[in-house]
Image (cartoon, rainbow, N blue to C red; front, side, top):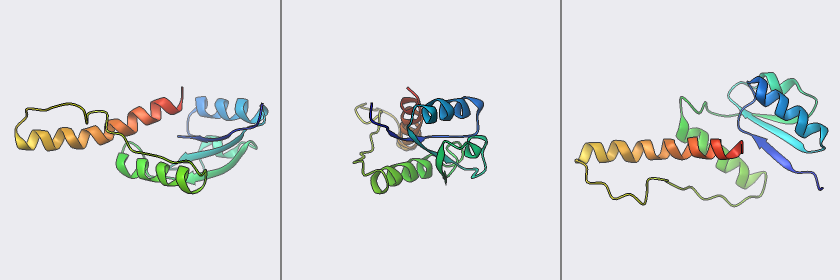
Length: 118
């Protein structure tokens, strides 16, 4: 199997550290995306680069923008944003509709992060 270029969405947990080790031993190139450039997994010999990104919990839109930009410019992948609530027709008062639209973009980041670990 040809080695893959993999971008992990965080590197602070023991699970991420174990994932880096397994992927690295399999010959894959692993980069990390984490707000802490000295996170636990960054010390692994299998990590090529640790990219400092906005914290997903504090700035989900900034995190999504960072990841999409990295994938497009460094990994040459075409990316499209997707709002999972976009197909819903909402009959909400104005302010609540705005709040749901804002939460929808945060949900996009959460869904993308969840899909990245599958």
